[in-house]
Image (tube, rainbow, N blue to C red; front, side, top):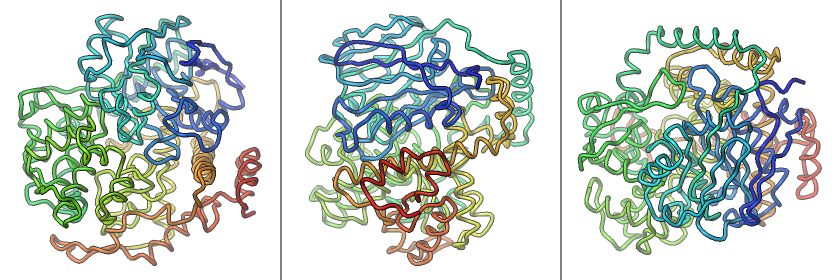
Length: 614
């Protein structure tokens, strides 16, 4: 197999020993997992002991790219950050746009792995083969915007920077990794893992030309793909509103999370939608190599710039009863500066308000009370009060302390992103079986579901969820490129297959990538099962259930008043999904499935822990 497209090596940095070494990556590993998410979960499986504490030095922090990352092509400036999650205790990762993606490719590595823990606050500077572990006392405690500016002044404006804010330093379990003053990734607490290692930032610069099999054809194909994207009918409106157009769509289709996912419509939705954003917009921001920019910047309630997208506006807007986009934007900007997940923050605030109104929390809170919400947000991000500290531990912990299980909208500990599913069983399934917990990025099936019959629980719906998982959570996460030109503009997948082939010299079809995607999904599920059992918990199909509220509390308003999920039919839908993947009734991959996907070593490990079905 060729190693073109890949460097065939990773950089391993032991923070405890303050040592760095280059490690060759087996060629068969690259062909089996491609890169990004696939490479990350394989490294976690191979190099972490089952049952480790996610915030211990034993956990690995992985920064990984894929074979087309940083090369010419639509939206290839993306990077995957991964670790065992302190929020869910399963596999956790995130994908964010950053110059780091391009610079890591140019530095000569397919991934950087951080083990151990620095004795003091540090940051790592990588420039090709040079690695420095530098003192970060002057950066520790700073917000992400200020710290990144300081690092760029020190190392050059073209450097790639990944860093944490005060939330990551305090090991808030929904802390993320931030780049370019507003790009955020790692919802399952990957920023907390970085903080647990006393690692404030990763700065990368590279000057090498990546190995490419056919650079001329790759550049020509990339140029054509850029033109094709711009010529798509949806392009002009996308450039106006980006993901913010989804506010109106979600309102019209009763899936806009409102009052902590109790309703699907919000009376003040027009105050936070894409048209309101257009009137406020002052600029746009994009990731490297992108000509379909999605970052729309507005001035918030304090007059500062804030970059918005659908999920953060819905979760910090309608979900907590806030209908003023300037105020939503302020919460969003502060969350990015603190380095905390905007989705998780909105869900934690929603939990607190609902639990307060039901008497589970003594402190009185009301929907849309901005001063109170702003205070609570800071309490969570900085662990300032007992309530803030409990919410910073995640929804599972908060519900165990305060009660109100129905108020905790999560799957496996990760808060649900911004689509209510009282009347969307397919999207509820995609949350239930998502690789990292309740995240839309793996299978955004809700648009298809709304147009193809939202109240059905058919095998076809389970098949569609899996199909999208393989593309969104497999193909794009492994080659490491942005999925938005495909899903929002309709840019054909074949463009990415061609770029992959010109980069690597392989002659793969999309079907070949789907096999890798299935292998990745199955290994991730095996990792979850391994970690749960190593920690003394028993895995069962209830782990793949969406929030209880969607079954027990119907909508009370809107065009779909009375709608709720049917638990028996959902369970049947889940069973259809398991059958498609070759997993048993518990949601555990069968031994025969593991062997079919070349995961015999995984079968051996799991078989010693639990009884596998053949």
